[in-house]
Length: 147
Image (cartoon, rainbow, N blue to C red; front, side, top):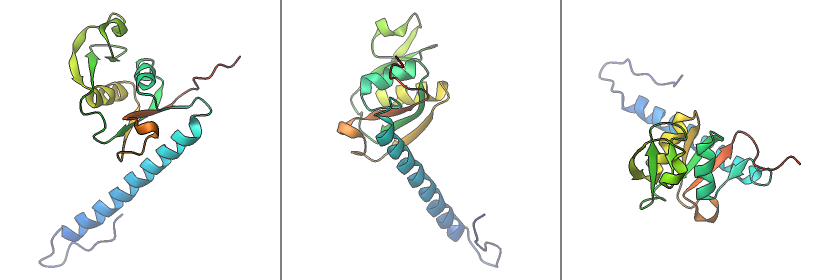
């Protein structure tokens, strides 16, 4: 509940909207912070990945729990959108028999694949991801061998 009085005569929703904007910004900032912390701590355990090609592979496998995208970091890159699993591919050979719907901006293809595999998407500030990567992932299970 946002403590704002919008009922008095002549009242507008400006104060309410400003309060909502502040609250939403705080929630999104905390979500970004938490995701970046998990990315930092999860890389040693095989529960996070910042390599672009690896993120695409993990999305294909439904392994991504949270996709992190750096805002504006993939302006020229494209990927293939597919009509069924694995939903995204770098090349037609990676489509695993799925029909190619077309080449689309990489950010769009990654978000589409994330949503279709029940992953959350968190947009982070440019430069926040390791090595200047445009995308990273928090994983549902470890990529490390258990042997």
